[in-house]
Structures are given as C-alpha cells and as structure tokens.
Image (cartoon, rainbow, N blue to C red; front, top):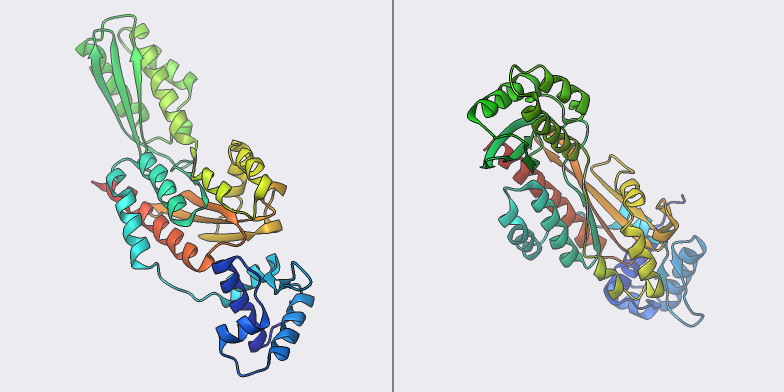
Length: 342
C-alpha cells in the first residue's frame, strides 16, 4: 500500500468524517472550509482525484463530490481515526441499560446487545459465556412437589440454568441426600462437556437405593450441562437495518441472514482478536459486502468467554462506536466476574 502524504491523509480523514456525518458527497470547497488548508480548490481537487485513482475515494456522479470507498474506510480506521475514550453520555446510557441484569449473565448479555443496538442504530449479535472450559460449580435440587423438583446448575462462567424434573416415585429426603452425594463426588468441578448420558446412567445405577428415582435426575443434570456448554447467540436491534438508506431493498435479505445461526456464528467467531473490524468485502459472506462488522471479546475471570458484535452500513460512526463497544465488553466481563465471585 502506497504511503499517503500528510495532505492526502488530512483530506481523506475529512471526507470520511463529513460523509459519515451527512451522507452527502464532499466537494473541494467544502473540504477547504472543513480543513482550513491554505491551498486552492484546484489543488484539493487534484488531491481528491489522486485519492480516487488510488482507490480510497469514489465519485457517485460525474458532477458530485467524493465519498469514501471501502478501502478508504479501511485506511481511516487503521491509520487516521483518532483514539478516544467513550463520551460521558454514552457511558451513562450503557451503565443504566445493563445494571439491572448484573446478576444474570445471559440476561446481561441480551440487554447489553439491545443497549448497544439502540446507541449505535446497528444490529447487535452477542454470545453468552460458553465453550469447552465451562466447569460445573454448583447444583441445587429444590423440591416443588411430591413427585417433582427444580434442578439449578451454576457454571464457572456464571451461567445459571434450571430445569423442572418429574419423578415416577415420591421425592424423599433419602433420594435428595443420595443425589447430593453423587453431585459432590462425580459432578462438581468437572467440565460441562464431560458430563455424558452414559456416565450419568452408570452413576445412577451404582447408587445403593432407588435407581429409577435417580435416573431422571441424572438425565436432567446431563441436559443442563449440555445446554451450558454451547454458546447461545442473541440478536438485537435488527429492525435498525431498515433505517439505513444504504441497504435499500437488501435490508430484508440481510435480516434473514442474521437470523441463521451457523453463518452468523462463523462471522462472530472468525477472529480471536480483542477487537476486530471487517469492512465490506473483507467479510466472509456476500450478504455483508455492504456492511461493516465490529466484534469485541469480553473476559470472565481472566478467560475469554464471549463476544459482542455490531453489524451496520460501512458508513458508520467508527470513531464513536469503537470506544462504546470496547467499554461495553469490558463492563460486561467485570459484572459477570463480580457476580461469580460474590
């Protein structure tokens, strides 16, 4: 990639920022007013022509000004965008929007996605904590009837799952005691992925007591463990896509794409970087060739746990959106970690 002169950099940054703000092509006279450069309009036009020839700017109409190309946005994000902290208003909106869900990781992630979507006017895709490193920390058996109990499972990443379990026999104190003995000796401290149906059936059959009472309880534990081991994908703010003129009639196709689990999972899990920005045709799928995708990771207890991603038109406010998603993911990780340690 050819290195740009300082003047070309200044012009490209001004075009990107003004086009993001107004959605209108930027002309040479407007650029002079924006940048305050002491050169002629002809000089600016020549520089803009050079930038267009290099692929950084485009001219939508013969008589129009210039707009950024996807290559121009890429250069801007990587080299010209000023590093900045989240502004106070956005910070307060994020904190207020997710504070009520601080004790429930899945609800927290869901609300975080909705808040970020509202703030940025983009669609938000997020994953709850999950994966191969999930350890079972606690299991509770809460009797709710003569023949039924609620099982509650807590993992090391803060995920809380519950399931109603019905038994053919009466749920006695002895069965509850046997259940807790099995849980302590065979389940607590193990990886959720390692809890299998066959193992649980073997454990239930080895109990000195009512095997038929223990089998449904062990099966329920296995089902809960499996459900925590897979990352849940949540979509928020998808209706925001219809508000962007850049998508036009393609908004519905993009929305249908975002509702398909496998491709959107591939998109959000494509990179393991703390924060990644894919612009236009850099994305894996044709449906995203006019979109930018920003994905950031959050960490729970020092380990990588989940991701939050934004999807919107390439003409998005990168300078404000990137600090917002960074702050949100840091806060989510902190709140989930605190909930686990309490």
